[in-house]
Amino acid sequence: MADKHTIAAEEFAAQYKAGKLDEAYIMDVREPYEWEAGHLDKAHHVPMNTVPERLAELNKTETMYIVCAHGVRSWHVTQYLLGNGFEHVINVEGGMAEIEQYLK
Image (cartoon, rainbow, N blue to C red):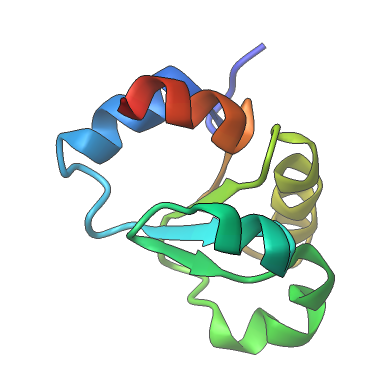
């Protein structure tokens, strides 16, 4: 069930390819070894366990897309950010596993 805080991997990939996310903040919350294996050029690496200590770095008014490997960790980070006053946070469902299929 989609809401304003979720986006399907296919739609995210289409917007990414079209340059529609160039102004957005894309947060990749995967572990360093996952990031090194491959990531989106426009993404910012903020491992899930570092999000609480890095909240001050994030802009509460900016639209943020949260990405992980399969959409589970990103969902948790999205919920955490929503609970800490961030309103424009969107979980990318399916994560990099699905996004990569649509970026080929």
